[in-house]
Structures are given as structure tokens and as C-alpha cells.
Image 1 (tube, helix red, strand yellow):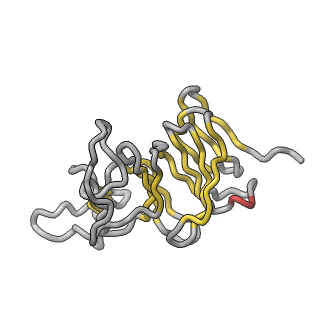
Image 2 (spheres, helix red, strand yellow; image 1 turned 45 degrees about the vertical axis):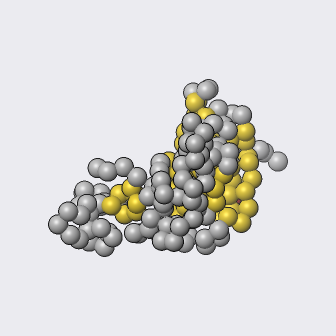
Image 3 (tube, helix red, strand yellow; image 1 turned 30 degrees about the horizontal axis):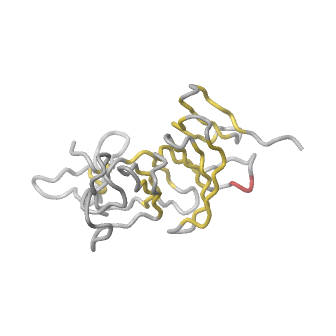
Amino acid sequence: MPAGKTYRIFPDGSVPADNPYADGPDAIGQIFTIGNRNLQGLAQHPITGVLWGTEHGPMGGDELNIIASGKNYGWPVISHGINYNGEKVSELSHKEGMEQPVKFWTPSPALCPLEFYTGNLFPKWKNQAFIGALAFEQIKRLELGKTEVLSEEVMFTGIGRVRDIKTGPEGALYVVLNNPNVVVRLTPVSQ
């Protein structure tokens, strides 16, 4: 399969008829979006149903995007980062017909997992986004509006490379770390 795309299929492997590139003799029907550099986290908002994604940029330009059918996210035509050798990826950061990230980070924290908290142990965090970072070794909590970031808080930093975050069945947040290689269970402090 070609890189730089998001693919959408049913659990049985069949292709949804409403995928944007499902028609045509040379079409790859599984393609849902194009122009993605390196999607790392993908999660659907539990209330709005909006699909959100975290994406690695080059050096700088990590992105938070709303992933929507048929959209072009611009890679490598537009970018908010530079190549690892210091050269510009592109002279453009905007172009008509290409999506802008909802938010981008420069320098790059190396965003990875994305999880919407759906438990009951932390009522103030209900339906908020948690994003892990590899290079910055962080967990960020984002309050999202329909199409924007309303607030961002770094919850933890220097804890290890954050590989995954999940809401447990009892409402705790589970965090998978490298360096150290552990799984951490986050629960409220007893009053």
C-alpha cells in the first residue's frame, strides 16, 4: 500500500462504499485521507464522533489533526517543520485545498498515542484528550472544542518515552513507557 495515507476498512477487510477513492479502475478503495506524514495516534471523540489524529512532523511540525474523508493534509507540499539535515521540507506552510493542523508543535515533542478519557475516576477529565510524547517524555491533557484546542496542560514530563495511553475498565489511566519499560496505572490520590 502507498505511504502517506490513512486507510479505512471494515473489520472483515471489505471497503466501505463511501470511501472517497473507492471508484475508478486504478483506485485504491481503502484510502480515506492523503498527505499524511506519519500518523501515530488515532481516536474518536466519545461525544462528537470526530476522528482526531496525532502526527509526527519532521524536525518540528508535529500535528494534531481532524481526520476526515477525502482530505489532503499536505505532506510534503506543506509543512511547519524542517528536515533532519536542517533543510526546509517546503517553502510553503499553507496551500489551498490542503488542511491546516488544528495545532502544531515546534520544536517537535514526537507525539505518539492519543486517548480520550472515558472513565469515571477523574470526572473533570471526562472526554478530554491525552497525548503522549516520545522525545519530550510527556503526557499532555488537551481540552478540545468541536474543531479547536481550548486548553493544553503538560501533566507529566521526564517520565520515559510515552508509547500508549488507555482508559482502563475501572476508570484508571494506563500508560506504557519505554526507558523505563513499565506500565503505569494512574488513579486519584485519596483525600
